[in-house]
Image 1: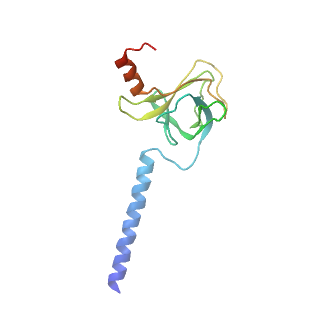
Image 2 (image 1 turned 30 degrees about the vertical axis):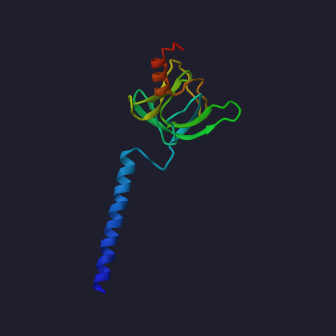
Image 3 (image 1 turned 90 degrees about the horizontal axis):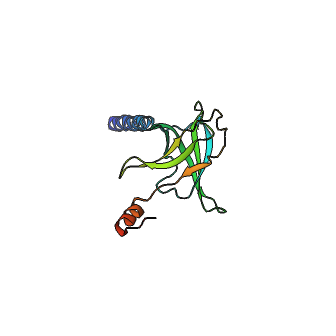
Length: 148
């Protein structure tokens, strides 16, 4: 019977360590189950590389995440819902674009702030967007000599 108590105690310690590790890992990558931001909407011709949970950045600093991604059946554009930190006031003439961290890096959504003194309200849509650029299509254009 003493062996079973020891095994149960060791199993409990292992489970507690796993829960602690998962908690540390989720905090270190910035994941939180609570939503403390406000929603904004962006529509892109191409959203290659973007998925739910993709970072939203401004000036290289993470300010939110992509909360949903769907195809608009009327315009055939990718509709992204973004959650941006509550304290951040995004100018209403800001642009949003899909960028990459480097040549082979990950993809993120970048907000390029405008100069307006008015800010975007909850649920507002970005009017100026730039979709992702395919590296393969750029290389094919370069190799084939097309100027388009």
